[in-house]
Image (cartoon, rainbow, N blue to C red):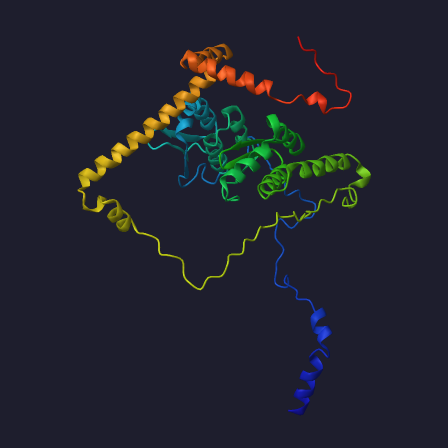
Length: 380
């Protein structure tokens, strides 16, 4: 018993640091897979051709697979126009398609002539791109083996509607310049439509870069920072000497600067303390009792409200008409109007007013007597 205890104590780690440094081997029971070849290019997509002997067991698929996608109402006219082209291209892959205008959906399914098992997923992506307003000439490229697509949903990334529209426009840029620069740097076709951004290209790396730029733009990171970084990476990739080196020393490091803005000082108006509570406000019933409308019938009350509304609207229309007439009057018309107003005053009253003004001017003191160096006017 004592020997067993001694053996157990020697097997345990002596200190806590030794137990922390001991690493677990998670691949202890893992067996080698056929694709665990370091020389294999896992990103290389081999084309499925019958000439090279690529055939399904039994010659065709055992079960039928189908995918359906809804499309918006404004897309119906365009899809009806280009659907023969879509049908022709899918028929070459051994797939059948259907356009349902009643339900507003597009369906694609496999047939007995389907030889490539992956083409049904390509056709599913084709329907998604067509429903997201991509032109048919661009969307049909997804049927090629080396083309992939990614649909980024941006509708739920920003809660405020106005802020969402501004950031989406920031992604497009003035006259689409930002989006065009992003397409050139990533090598992908990008379309911003509604609450989604459709990206398609022949490079997984380009799709990943485009998604990062779109998501960061919705998180208030300007796309110009990513564009600068992508431009530098593109230039560095041309130098074979820097292929195995770390590029972090060449790339710009942009940091967020939370600038504290000075808030306007609040004017605190301290009310005088009163031990008495504020007077209670009158309710609607009290107001009706004061005016006497409480005892009137509902019909009389509505008639009175209608009369009040008509009086208010008539007063507003009169004020607007007078203001409009005043704006349209010319200086000559204003002068004529002033003359007419003076003519309405009796002649005797006008003569009296003129004499009063003349007397007031004659009795006014001469200012030149009190100003040094001023010349007195000659009196005739």
